[in-house]
Each structure stands twice: as C-alpha cells, then as structure tokens.
Length: 407
Image 1 (cartoon, rainbow, N blue to C red):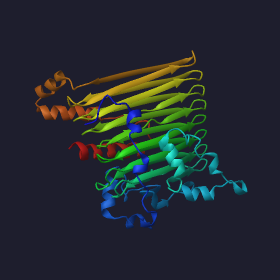
Image 2: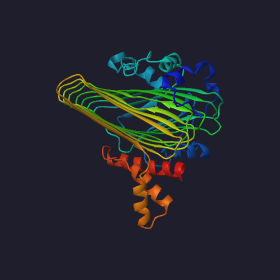
Image 3: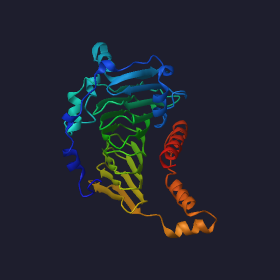
Image 4: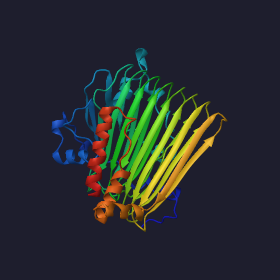
C-alpha cells in the first residue's frame, strides 16, 4: 500500500530511470495498413477508444519506441513520425523549421523525465500539422502501446501545430499489455495553436498496476485560439503524475480542460493543469471529477494565474470517496497578478450521501442500483465544448471504458 503521506517529489526521487531500458528497435514491426494490426492489439486499442475500423482522418500507432503504422487520409492535415518530420521540415527552401518548435512549449530541463526524453531522441512520437484553414472531417487517432517487454522505458515526443484558421480533432489512447511488467512511460507533447485555430484533444489512458507514467504537456494559444481537452483514466496504475502547462498568450484565447479519474487498487495519481492567462480577454476553465475506491490516492490540482487584462478563470474539483481507505486531496489555486481579472474556484470531496441513496431506494431501486445511478450521474460529463463528432466519440469512450472497468 502506498504511503499517503508521501508527496509526489518523494515518489519521483524513488524512480531510477537507469533501471529501465529502451527495447531493441529491430524487433519492432511496421504495418502497411490498419488491416495488418493483430486482433489482440486491436482489442487493446479499443479499450482506449481507438477503433481501427471506424471513420478517421488518420491513424498513428507506436509500440514501445518505434512507429508501427502512420496513415494520413485528409489533404492539408499532415501526420507522420516525428523523426521523419524533423528531416522534412528543416527550414530549407523557405519550409517550416521544426526546430523552432522543438522544446519550446515544454522545457527539456523541466525535470529528469523531460531531460531523459531530450537525451533519448533516438525514440519517436508523432507530428500533426494542420495547414492554414484546413479541418479534420473525422478525428485523428493515435495509440501509444507498451508491449510485453519487462522494464521497458517508453519515451515519446509529440508535436502538434494548428496553423491559422485550422481545426484539429484528435483522440489519443495510451495503454499497456498485461504482460508489460514494471514499465515506465515518458510522454512529451507540445501543442502550438495559431490565430483563430481550434484543437480538441481527448486522451484516454489504460495502464496496469505496475506502470509508472509521466506525461509532460505544454500548450501555447495565440489570438482567438481555442483548446478543448478531455483526459480520461479509469484503470489501475502504479503511479501517475501530470500537470499540463497552458499559456494563453493571445487576445481572447480560451482553454477548457476536463479530467475524469476512476482510481482503484493501490493506484497513486497526481493530476491537474496550470493555465497562465496572459492575453487580454482570454479565459480558462479547469474541471476534474474523481472516483476513488480501494486503497487509491488521488491529488487533484488546478491552478490559474491571472496576468492579462479582463481575463477570467474557474476551477471546479469534485470527488467521491467510495472506500474508507481511499483518499483524495483537492488543491485548487488562483493567483491574481492584475486587478482586472475574475478568478474563482470550488472544490468538494466526500462520500455518497445516505439521503440520496435512501431516496432512490424509496423509488424502488436496490442499494447497489442507487449507488450505480449516482456514480453514473457523476460521470455524465459535459462534452459540449467539443465539436459534435468528437463529443459523440468521447461520450462513447467514457461509456465503453466505464463499463469495462467498473462493470
């Protein structure tokens, strides 16, 4: 059982990256099409919302540290392995220079995990580039998979650029094979959303009880840019720590982020987001919903820094404790650096009300049925900030994952 008095810095210090290794890249397979993906891998992908046979604007699959499949289906929306993109976009002949974006939204020296990713640039990730005015018809899909390789160190670096007036809808699923024992996932993602561009990003994690996970995400929003972010994890994990940094540098830019966690077993989560409101009139909303059972421990953070003129921000953290040995710490923080800001927060942690259960039982439900109905209502998240096609997919993913993990 995890010591709930330990803080994440202590847990990070306990991680010795030298105990993990990058697998032999020569053992990786490359698939020519979606039809070549083995059925057992398709099943793992489906658990994180990646349905190979569904309509999509493109698909990217990476097992371990080497891409297995990369297919782009929409003109004007580029999808390719990052190493390939670095060669293509080197700034020659007036082309985009990808080095101008490399480690700009996330600092390579942020911590030992980003430093490890910078050192291990022999590994890969995906590059997504929406040209000016171009839009995805169906969501792009990407899956990062940890194969059954004991002690694997998966190091991924992703860069996403939405040029002015473009729109990107992305579903990313990260998962591990049941035989992947004591693996660690280091995922760096950098988003650059230009003027009047929109990005909607749904990420689903499905790990196992021995996996350690350290995503590092940076998002930069220019004038009138919009970013909607849904993060869903409803499986056990050894420990996971993430805190995306969103910089709203452009006038009237906006960020909406929602996290949904179902923590079970001895899982340890330290999740949150930090939004820095810099551009005039920009706004951010950070929402988290946590269900904690068994001996799990969740720290739900949210921080908004109000720096620009007439900016607004709100944090909403809610948690239900479904076990007497589970624990949730809710830590919202708002910092006003300008008198012309409006920042608010609310937080609640508690068990399911006996009165609510008794009321539903008086309407003919059993106690279990009443609890399940309350939990289902708690999981009924607002997907309206997403475009209709991605909202529908996100709702389907939540339903699929919740039924799979909660019964």
